[in-house]
Length: 179
Image (cartoon, rainbow, N blue to C red; front, side):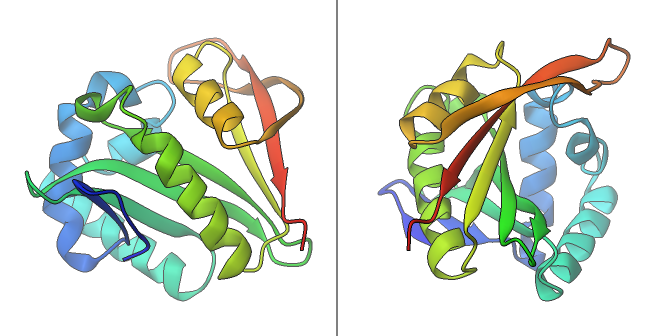
């Protein structure tokens, strides 16, 4: 376990999580179709989720990408998926990405989880820079970045194209390991 938040725990992805990830993604499909289309598409059925989990466990083993799940300890569900991805081991930089369920929106779990993952990235993975890239219309994600002391760096012009949409400008936020 990476962190304990009373009713929720943060864990690295495990093989047994496939069914709960499928349920989580499908029940939040409308929330994730714009900014998490790849993860959503890879988890629309239990069979797809089995492949997704296997692939992500390989990425964890190879230190390419780390996937974490926020587990509701009372309901026995997954209420969030968090990534440390796009890791450049030479520059010690990575990107945080996250998707939370409607069940916990506005309750501070994303902020608490991102803070725990910043600590994990800096202390365990020994990264020096973490980024969050979000669209300014994603107010919740912008608030998480700001609440976790990430600094706005710049607008990345037309850097993300959601399925069936025009390219969007994205906002780049960073936080640095001062050690």
